[in-house]
Image (cartoon, rainbow, N blue to C red; front, top):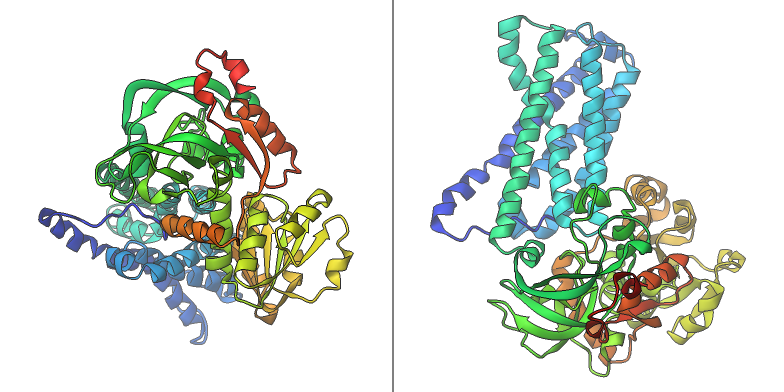
Length: 582
C-alpha cells in the first residue's frame, strides 16, 4: 500500500465530492479498527487498579503480556494502516507515506502472531466454543498470509499486486471493529454472549471487510485502466500485424520457452514502441518462468501465465510513439527496462513508458547497453537510496561476481567508497579490473574475519545467514539485502531490527522505487560518460537461443550479464518452434 501508485489525482470537477468524501475514510477506519484495541487497553488498565474489574477479565490478569503485545501491535497496525488510505498524504507527503507503509506490515504480522499467542496463552472464554476459535485461527492465518503475499509482491517490484494483497490484509486486520457493529443488533435479537451470536457476528464482519477490500482493489484497477496504466495499456493496444517472440505457455523449466507469433503491440498514451535489438537475462525472468516463489502465480496466473513473454532489459530503436510523448522521437536509439510493465522484451517489439527509456550512452552499442538497465538501476538504488553511501566509507559487496554485484562495486567506487568484493574464484580478476580495492575468494573467507568492520555490507541474493552479514558491520553500519528467497527476506524484514540492534547497526531490504526509473537511467548515462561505469557482459547469445541461455543462467557461475542479440531474430520467419527456442 505504501508504494501504491494507482491512486491518480482526480481531474474533473464532478470528481471533487468523491475526493472530499474519501478524505473521511482514514478517520472512519481508525475508529472502526481501534475499537477492539481500545477495549483491550481498558481491560489492561483495569488490572492496574487492584485486580480485574471487567467481565471475563480473570483469565488475562495473571500474565497480561501476550494481551499487551496484541493490543499494542493491533493499535499501531490500525493507525498506520488507515494513514495509507489518506489521499492528501499520498500526494503531499510521499516520503512520510512510505515510512508509515514500511511499518504497517511488521505491525500487522505482530498483531496476527500475537493474536494466535493469546489463544494459546489464556483459558478459553466461557462463550467461545470450537467454531469461534476456528474462525479466529483462520482470520489470523489469513491476515499473515496476505501480508506475506504483499511483501513478496513488493520485492518483485509489482506494486499493484502489493497494494491488492495489503488491502486484503488490512481488511482482515481491522475486522474486529466491524464485528462489533455486527454484534450489537445480533445480541439484541438473539441474546447476549452466546456462541451463535459471536460466530455469526465475526463471520459477517469478515465478509463485509473483505467485500469492501475487493471493491477497493477493483476501483484501483479501473482507475489504472482509465489512465492508461502501463501494463494494461500494453495488453490493450495491439494491432493485427503479428510479430515473433520467445514465449511460454506453462510454468516450468527453460524447455517451456518456444518460438511464437503474437500480436504486435501499439503504444498507448505516454508510451513508446521499441524495436528490440538486444535484451539480457535477469533473475526475474527465471522466477517468472518457474513460478518460484509460488507467489508469482498470484500476480501472473495461478495455473498458466498471463504475461507470456519474458525480458526486462531493452536496447533498440523507437519505432512509434503514443499520444502525449514529448521527450522521445521516432528513430531514437534508447535503452530501458520493463520490469514494472509486464516484461515482454524477448520479442521483436515491446512497449514501454516514456519515462522508462533513455538515449543509449555515447560509445555503447545495443549489446552493451542491454546489459545495464535493470541490474545497474538496482545497484544504483541500493547505493544511493538504501545505503546512502558516502565518500570514504568502507563497503563490502558479497556476491560481487554477478551482474548486480559488478555494478555495485563500480557505483560504490563512483560514490567515493573503498570497496571490498567477495566472489567466486573465476571472478577475482574481472572484479579487480572493475576497480575493487580488495577482492576475496568466497571459498577462502578466513581473511575476511581479520578485516576491519564495514560501514555498508551489500548481500546480493542473501545466501549467507543474516547474522553473518551483521557481524561484518561496524558500529552504525548498514546491511542491505539485494534479493534473496522468501525466507531470507522475511527474516530481514521481521527479525533484522532485533538482530542488528547492538551498536546502532541497521538491516534494510532493497525495495526498488519505479518512480525513479527516469532519474536512474540518466544517472547511469552520466556514469558511463565519465568512465565510472561500464557494462559487465559474460557472453552474447542469439535471442533464438533464449532457452539455452536460461539454462546457462540457472547453472550459475555467470560473470556479469548474459546478453541476447535480437537483431537476427526477425529473419527467422519460418524457423520451427523447437529450433528457434533451442
